[in-house]
Image 1 (cartoon, rainbow over the protein chains, first blue to last red):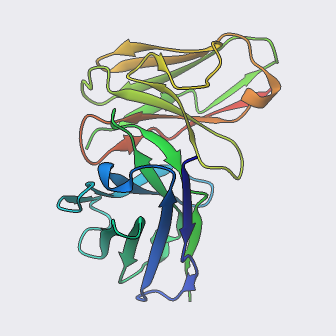
Image 2: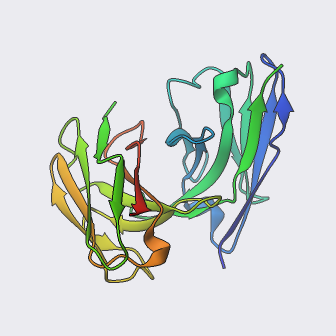
Length: 118
Length: 107
């Protein structure tokens, strides 16, 4: 059974940093790209970042480029999102998402809440 | 960035009725469109991929159509658990984008 367990969300002050983690199991982790998708309270969905299976290629939304860094540890089946220079508008539930062979999102984590506020 | 516009924002219907949800892309995306369903407090779930293919385990009352810039999600007969939010999503280019969502509510 595929499982994605998100963690690391917290209350942080503007300008602060946070690292999110996603522990994956039940599939061949290194074979699939992974995304982070976020959802601000009461709002829609935004694709934040993507990383290829081997970690060689990464992509970012303009809203987070140069502030967020996606990475993965294929030996530990874990996905990360390092978030720096956080802003109030980064407040959201962050989901780690598995990208299937058709490039759709077939499995989602339960989400972890990041709140940026003073 | 490809903009996806969903309409209506809210659809008020009764159980058993047919729901038709629309999604329009700002440029042609071929058939690279998916639909996701999101229940309160839960992560989204894939319903339809490549415009008209049902994902594994999705009931036959859900169907998708369209190509290019105009797409439709149809729920043939609404069940009580279908009164939630639906998002369209394009995968043809990065950044991947979602529509703003359509909420199907009980009339």
